[in-house]
Image (cartoon, rainbow, N blue to C red; front, side, top):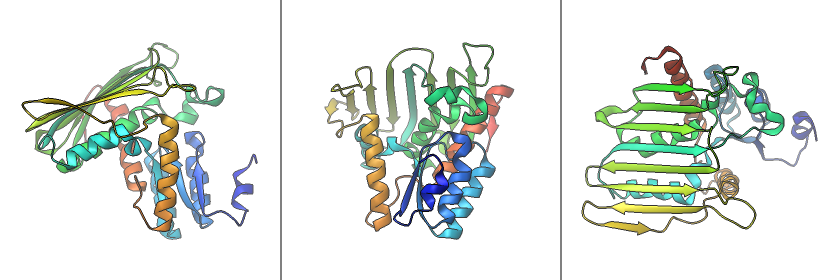
Length: 288
């Protein structure tokens, strides 16, 4: 089925999962919501704040559920980090570092190299990390400012940044550092948090994430005196995360679980990414 309109013409659908290039999100999401379907929309929610607002309006008027695909929230490992924070395992979190070291993801037909389709690469991988930072430091409220820097290994595409770092300010002096490179190899992600009474170290090694090989992960907790290695919380590969995301959406439609991330989370993450792009371009801090 090549046209989404054919899909929406069916009468046996309750939920539509939208996983197309970014520039198509607004059109298809609004059409699906207006047809009376609940929507699971892959991140980024859209390439502009105006499109995000249009989708939110369609969800509100249709009274349908709108979830945005931040599947890292459902990962055994990254979700376990948030559980430890809720359990007061390190006191009040004050510092969060989220790092990705990996190679490029081209997208089918290389669409992620087309700025008209992708928007920018900050809306691809780093958007996950902006969402995690908001989630992990939510006790402080919303971010207040972002300072970012980026560059590209190819001068012909300077806005598709291979290397990116951002400093995200929160109230009460808390802050997050988000840094990634897509000019390297394989896929390694690390999260480090420190608080008033301890620290958390979590790492994910996706270098063997193929076939029968699952990624390896490590989760360590420091209570101020002793370092303890903890269970990583179950499967944490990308495919499993997507499966969990679909299952969670179905539970939300049935009313048995809340959405893992809603349209407001989606719009806020886009706002942070666009502000980071502006900060990098202007080489100055952008305040909210």
